[in-house]
Image (cartoon, rainbow, N blue to C red; front, side, top):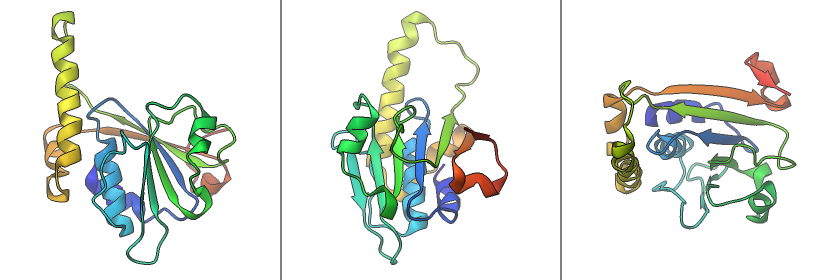
Length: 177
């Protein structure tokens, strides 16, 4: 996911918004770390779970990267209350699906799926599975950039990008009204 983020960063500009969705441990923060590296922003890029949003200024004269964790937010109004400069930044919102009403007319919805080996988790294993997912997210938050892709080597991800709005109309990719 880290390498994908570096590649995706080249297509982004100020005013772009990405909404990242996926289960715990899917690679949302790792993707955002890659975006940060590709954009040349000040790091380290870590999960903003406790502060809700972190701004990473550019070190190369580009737009800042704003990384938002919307998990605890209830509505688009609360997202808007964070007073983010959407027009001059590249904004990544984890857990933000369904919170963009009135925020912007164009965004990329990035769904990250991480297969779990085809194994069905029995109810008695559910707590252990959640604990592993949380541990993976915490480990990703404290890992350095060199460690960001380590988990990617073990488990492939499926990434589905859906473009919304006029900013992405020229790409000819799947769009929703």
